[in-house]
Image 1 (cartoon, rainbow, N blue to C red):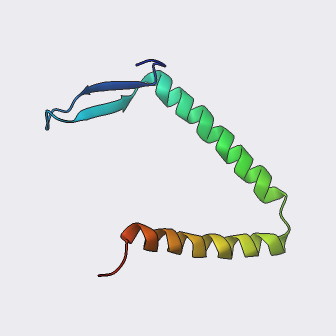
Image 2: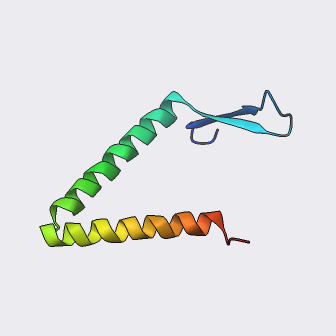
Image 3: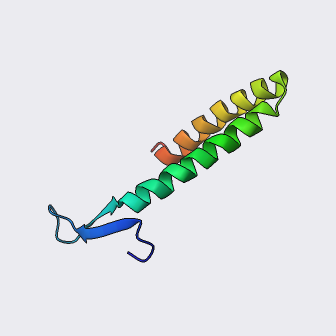
Length: 76
């Protein structure tokens, strides 16, 4: 618990495993980071023209499909 953001403890169901839980400080850090990420997303989106937004939406949908395909692996 170097930074105090997670707590590690033995897994109750598997002695080989470890359960990792966010501490209160970890929840605060995560909340601040999520707020920062959301603000950056809104700022980026606001700087795009309507045409650019349409292109980005289409590309992201195609990219998400590729990521899904790659994560599934080759069809045997």
